[in-house]
Image (cartoon, rainbow, N blue to C red):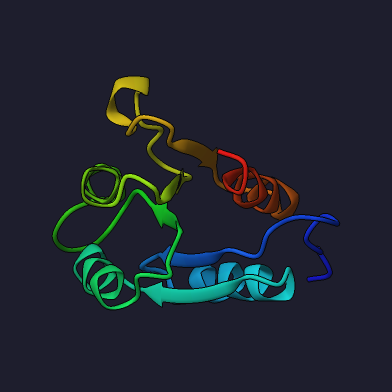
Length: 128
């Protein structure tokens, strides 16, 4: 992956939540290569623990479908409520959340997503 962060974009600290290890790895590598710091979690429970222990996280990038516990839309809502300054980006290839299901200010990216779209959403978080 050779995507780069646009000139002048602010580096973010992103939490990637994805149960598919390969998809998670690809997202993590894309974001790292673009100059962002990245934490990762395979499910919502781990994501919530990481958010408590890493106050520097300023962006959540989560898949909708999760094998156990809360799904990504519910995670996004919980994060928006507990951490209102965190940018929320939700993605899915199977389930597109209804507008009313997304937290206020949340962004939805359908899978398969283009790396440039992910980076634009993350970069957009810097000015949101």
